[in-house]
Image (cartoon, rainbow, N blue to C red):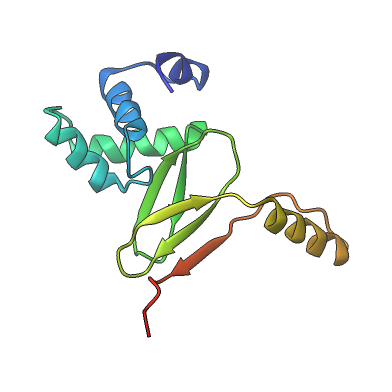
Length: 135
């Protein structure tokens, strides 16, 4: 995502917006809280306030550039909206968020909705996991 994506979403390409967009797209993890994103920017030498990060993330969410998730970790995390559906696994011990896509799971969900007389419009699947223990 870049300057043109901001313009297409009806947002001016200001320096804080561009830096936040860049930081969201940089490496792992891909799911960041506003505080994580703020720390990433400050560590990179950017002069940005936490309130600005929150405000820009709200604007990005409203414009459809990011997706906000409320996992059981107790805080919201954000990821860039690339337009491709995927589901999530969240480790209860580390808070790590992992993405996965499985066509069989998708098919079963559509089939279940149809069986009950509905068309599946959207869904969110989150698996809360722990590392396997030996023995």
